[in-house]
Length: 297
Image (cartoon, rainbow, N blue to C red; front, side):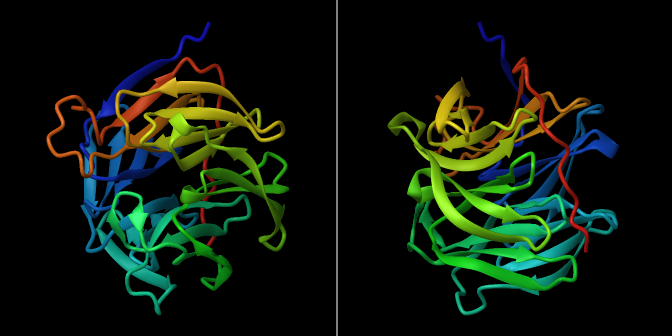
């Protein structure tokens, strides 16, 4: 019998909370409010929440080896200096597509940042199709495009042996895998390893645990699911009190806590979901995750 516990830890009421990231050195959780245009940092010891406002949709935050953070803002990769709240452009993508924006991303074990784009949403998950692409920002600040025709570029992670790259294009309702070359950062041989069940709705952010299983946040599905990429089966479901669960990451002192972001967009004052847009912590899962990698540039 499972003994997981779900609780609100940050009453952020984000319009579109995303990209949870544990930073060990400060016992802090970072995350973004995409359409609220801010990066937030919650101290798990003092419970204090700080926020840095930015001037465009901000869709991810990642650690940086040399200090500070990397964010994606609109269609640019940028460096965020938390202390003076300055944002400096590193590189741009999709400049021929003014209605595009970055969405989810993550740093690989070699210090490269993978992130993908999507078309402008008319409302949540309704958008011009096939406008996005998947990119890598290398440590030398150069950018490589892997493929295009993406609807909503979303969750991503790497297998424990770094030989497989996992990726979600949300409106394909599938979790995909690629062969991965850690030395070059190249991907090949795309295949689907899991197809969403109807009640699981839209696959969003994703994180891997130390047993090599994937945790996927289900947007409009109000849950995170644990899937086995080897067998393509769902092995666990944890339901949350909000429908728009967006992403998840492991954190806490031993990475045994799963943090889940959520959204409140297009819900109005829905009284049946007063916790929409908050950040949740799930404990008692009996599994642990891995520390996030830092961008090497």
